[in-house]
Each structure stands twice: as structure tokens, then as C-alpha cells.
Image 1 (cartoon, rainbow, N blue to C red):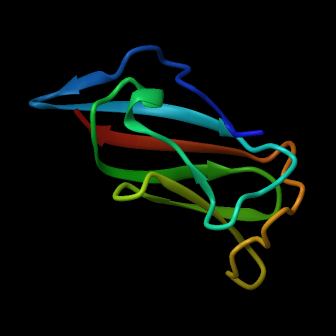
Image 2: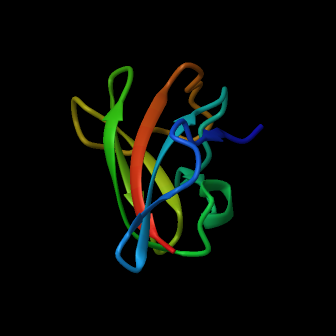
Length: 100
């Protein structure tokens, strides 16, 4: 089962020639190797230019890679990536993404 992506503010906001969108990601019961992959279309965009995690629940920190669309969870105690197949039910990440 894949993570759930929602855009609580609706459509992306326009910033000059770019768009900005806030998305909430709910992880599921089996963390995939390399993190969850999201697509620009899931966020109402056609491409990612830049993005950052603004919040993460539980005992994790989140990172976003706009080149791959990967949302990676790291253990906040040691910085290591969460092990594949870890139950991440209830983990929520908020991202702010700029793209078009």
C-alpha cells in the first residue's frame, strides 16, 4: 500500500512564474526501501523544482528529494534511514514544494 498524499490548501499558490503547494503525506504499514515516491501530479504540479519537509510526526525526521520525488524518513536519534518494511502507520509528514 502506498502513502496517502493530500493538499489541504487545495490548488497550488502562484509565486511569480512558479507554484507552491503544501502537501500532507500519511505513511502506511510498510516503509519502502528508499522512501515513499510522490509525483508532481499527486501535488497538482507538472514538475518539482524545490521542496522541504516542514514537519514530521513520531520519532522521525523527513527529507524530500525533488529530483526523485522521494520522501525519506530518518531516525531522529541516529540519523539513519528507517529500515525497509518498518511499520510507519500514523507517521505524517508535511512538505512545502515549489514547482510548476
